[in-house]
Image (tube, rainbow, N blue to C red; front, side, top):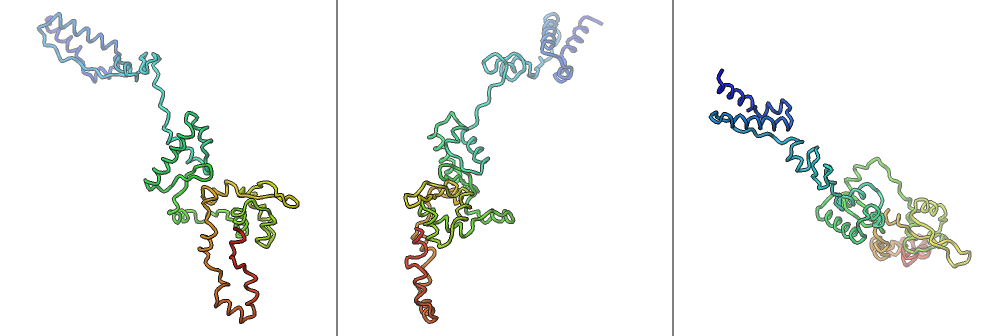
Length: 299
């Protein structure tokens, strides 16, 4: 075999395909040796046609990869020379607030959110919460961000109440009794109020009802009256606002609005009065019902 044939065979052996080099598991140093041998043979036998140069794919240990910071060598991709990946950027403030509000079933105050995101200030948090509420309302989502008392929480859209009710059929929620609702209305509209004043309006003992409202944290003791015996004064709590989904006591309907919803006292209807008078009850009916309506005493 001639020297020319030997050169051709050596060049052929050097010009391995990209796939064969990868399958052979050659390191970067080996690839450099192959390229150097190919160059030396080309200089020795310039008359032999030289194959196209190989293009090797970048590997995790290649210089280019190390320069980009994604290799496992000694590259300094983040500029500190330790080869570590850059630290992940902190999540956006809105994502943090959404996660916290979604994870709780109670209103969260701005002070509590400051503990979660101490790098922010109260004004920034309040502005972001208002922006979130506006964004949810504009997007027409099935939930809304409500401000209740001194906190914020996620609530379902009131327009979807019927569908939520269907889903919760069979899942009973503890409701307040009528006596508890009456007592709670008196406290809400006349607070601070004593137990004696409540019993005077309702005409019945309110001890057990007050115990229930206190246990459910809907009312609390606000102090003592200056009246004889210094009885306790009762008022509503933030839990009262959360229970009824209102921001403050100012959102309660006024006595006039309630009276318009209830309509006029039926005992004042002339036809009913004629019937009562014919049955000998005409004089007792006006005395049994206050002319000012049932809400006036409480309001």
